[in-house]
Image (cartoon, rainbow, N blue to C red):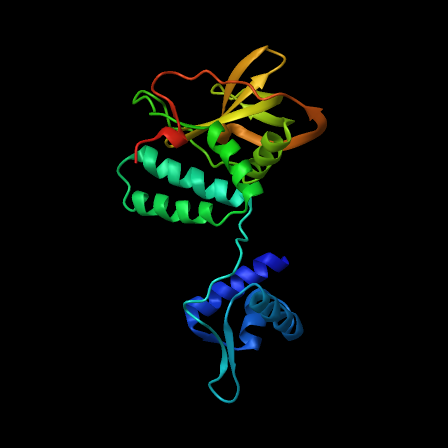
Length: 239
């Protein structure tokens, strides 16, 4: 388990259980006592207030009001939260969507200026629309978990993205495109890209994409993507 994953797991365990021993945390994250003690020290440096109580019944306790002093979320993680909230808002009938949106706004406010700049670029590329009731969803599949980080790297770095694609008829092709936008037609998500071989924009259903890979040294320019009138940017959705 990576350092950040260990830290997140330790904080989550202490929040849920109230108290935990070093041995219990070491078992939870699959590492040694010494490593856990270093992790606790690092978390305290990050601003978490963690108490230690010795003796029977003692252990480590996290102050329930404790929080880190600086935002640790990456732009990709915030964007992942953002598109989840966008999907909730697009569905229009899911509970807590307004609260999720408000919570996300607080996270955005905690980001440093460089991350805010990248997040705004993501906001400009995220669009929401309504799915046609005639759309066939019988073959809806899972999105490759590697696709979002690959899109992040390709979009921000203006790098070509290579992947395998399976169309509606099941035919498989290899594509090399310029990722320009994401479109949510709940429950379908699309990668909208400029396809140099076809000299036009193409919409790729994200659950039909596999083996995404960024290609270094192949920068492209961002283009204005034309959408239908019933599609709007995420930032223009009514609250």
